[in-house]
Amino acid sequence: MKSLFRFCARISAIMAIAASFAVPTQAGEVPIFNGKDFSNWHGRSTTDPAKYPTIDAAQKAKWDQEIKDHWSIVDGVIVNDGKGAYLTTNQEFGDFEFSFDYWIVAGSDSGVYLRGVPQVQIWDPDAANNKPNGNEKGSGGLWNNPAGWAGKDPLVRADKPIGEWNAMRIRLIGELCTVWLNDKCVVKNARLHNYFAKGEPLNAKGPIQLQTHGAEIRWRNLKLVEFSGDEANALLRKIEEETLAEAGQKFESLFNGKDLAGWAGSTDNYTVEDGTIQCQKGKGGVLHSEKTFGDYVMRVDFQLPPAGNNGLVVRYPTKAEFEAMPKDKRSADGAYVGMTELQVLDDGHANYKSLDPRQAHGSAYGMAAAKRGFLRPTGQWNHEVVTVQGSTIKVELNGTQILDTDLSKVTEYMANSPHPGKDRTSGHVGFAGHSDPVRFKNIEIRSIAK
Image (cartoon, rainbow, N blue to C red; front, top):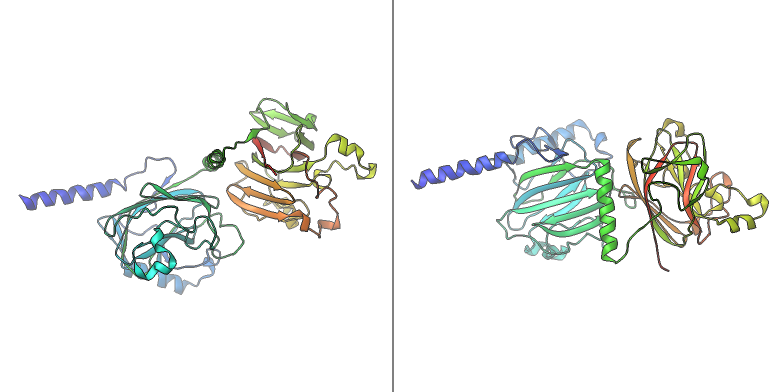
């Protein structure tokens, strides 16, 4: 009877595991592991994702053989013996939430690479050999973040005892990473450092890698949900609002979604359609807020048509200031008379193949170049946050910081054209239309107290 009971229990356990690999019901869920084989995976060790395509076929074959030699599947559970290449998804991912269970032995040291970049740390928090590395703080930290960066160490120790299964959930949007371990938040909206390129943004896409590091580790219930652009934008806004709420702050809306109340300047060249402000095709000029601002954080969603061109005007002069300027200096171009114009541009379009780097999307026009490659496909909505504080400007696009510059230190200008307004300390915010029907919505601002 006991044998029959054990047999039935074993069958029930196997059925439960199989059920976890059934057809996903959650929208966006990607079946990265089928519970039977590694057909969606390959072998790869720590390698710069940008350089992986240049790795020779012999090395790739060696890594794949190591997967066969050191990784196995037992009753739907992935088992690694502590050796070999890392198990790596064939598919690359942008914004996602990845959840799984893991089981380790004493002394284990492992992790998860996100977009091919190390890593969310997994290890034995009581192992003596890793005490100099801070393992007593627990698993879940972004181990390869530089010292002093948020997320390097977990907020709390949430590991279960060795021999028990741990549940981990990782969310990555842009560069912003949040990790939950056994239902406790251990990393909260921390930027994941680009291990392979110091000072550069995190890759926009890349594979998931399960690391092996000298001791047995097991994985089960692997599930990945990939976010659409709209879903990622909504999550980014939620993160921003939660962060402000914790500080007792909030954004002020600049657009009521119905008309241009509160706006001035080239109002005849812009229209309000479907809750968005849109520059009319063939028209342009600066549409600016009636209010003025000094230091601030502004967030906005925008949608580009193919080859679309517009800009975010920073600290544009008031009417009185404009009229006080010498007549030969009264350019209406916000990039010059304002502090700057932050480009809003489909910079990957063939029309801009000869673009100066200081004209790319997010750049302080003609003065400081933003990092490229983080715009969503044309026609999708992008989420951007601009922080202006003193002479510094930061631009975050879809969760990735693409510009961090101090305009007071700029001494070289595109086409040697000076920017007389770059040292302004206050002014209007707005849009610099350039004949294209670029659309804006969810326009909000928060002043920064000096």
